[in-house]
Length: 93
Image 1 (tube, rainbow, N blue to C red):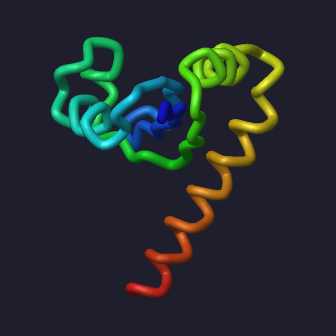
Image 2 (tube, one colour; image 1 turned 180 degrees about the horizontal axis):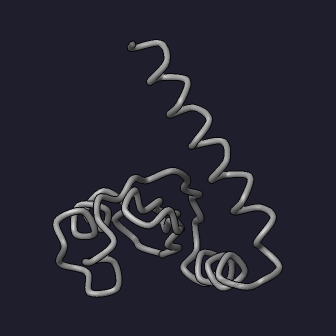
């Protein structure tokens, strides 16, 4: 099983798209700072992932999500995460 994932940087508000065979381990590496491309963008939150049976399908989806055509899709995911976070903060206070 292969995964594509989207991380949200709470530091700069940007998204990072990646692909991995072991989602949990890869996200741990991002959060610990051992992944060079996201080291300075921590803290990071996993806000979306998709499963694929084949590596080829997962990498094709990752390429799409990194393209300009996927901007609207990623924007919706980001807004949904931000709204849910704010709602949880309101409920907690």
